[in-house]
Image (cartoon, rainbow, N blue to C red; front, side, top):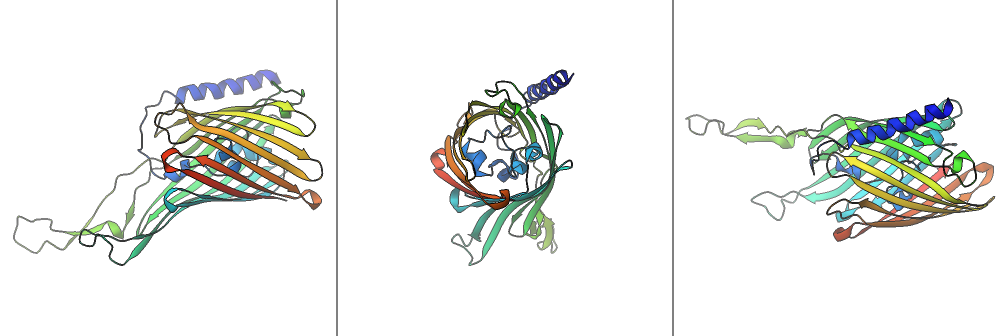
Length: 351
């Protein structure tokens, strides 16, 4: 009965993936694109192939079901300088309660920095500056319904600011994570194949509002009268959020006393581009009583036409401290083609 139920769940996940792949393709038609960048150096170093592998606090971004496999409280801060001097970051904290699940809060954001105010008359600037930034605050929950099956959900508040104009949205993430005994080199379930699936940013549309959209216009230029100072409000279009459906698997073909090799692959269906595939690998070397060392690599956006993403790699180290606490430092390198490359840094504290 247990195996039959497990097979039913897996079949349902694959059927959902097949159904979503039939959706129409719309390139570049969504708002809040910062939600699609990727956050957390471990997952980024593996080419974003992380939906089935995540089991730490960065699950608030990749797959909230990963929180159900988190064993202790964690805090993470990740910093990612993006292109054109744009700064992105992730800050999250989670508390795991045995028998009740894991509750987490998170913040992902983008700071675009200061920019000059220009007009048609003042092409070089008026002397004023303005600021722009986006962020998403999230509340997540994950829990295991069985030793091999976990689910999770995230509620998000999303806000985008451009000088005196802003837009708001609410969104929901859902995910499942399945641990199977298949292909386990040690016959232990924890080393078997994992299946993961998540749906991110299912929510309301975004439309900008604010005093910057007020204009003085002449509403009746062909009639006598003083209409030139009539106030008009520019109503902007509303745009969907970048909906991301991920389904993936990971296996551990090599598990020895102190060594473990993990291979992972994710298939993505989004509402603003074509389908693509991410692949990644992670090699772990553990030193009992001291910690772990990680080496990671991957490739993002395989089979995506005109993609600027490419190979990724990174490494990390976890230092074991007193009373089973620890600190982990991770780094990732991302190749983004004509736009150069990005370095990602992150620190996790395990209590």
